[in-house]
Length: 128
Image (cartoon, rainbow, N blue to C red):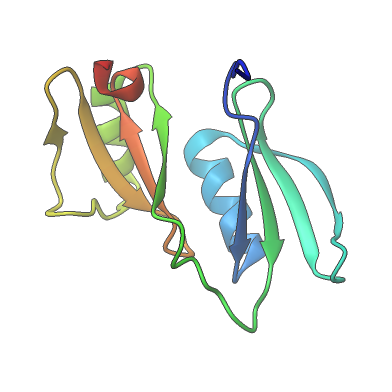
């Protein structure tokens, strides 16, 4: 069996690279780690926080199809402070606009500028 230590990266196609980079930098403090052109000649950027979470973004302004991807989850250190930060930035909360309570955790759901959903949760894997 392959032993997993953590998520290495997530790869998304986005419609507006600059807007996406600014969103993740402003909300989570992500830094651009690498940028260039992918094998199809489209711009790509690797952004994130070293040893925590990295996103690999490819830009395609002509078409955006994220239908096969639902969301990714991030655990946060202070859930209540995170909620206040999201609200102060006027980022809409999805699925009824509130906090979703689970048996051992709470979550809020937001979307980045491309509509990619992000679950911000209090406890890793909902305490499972």
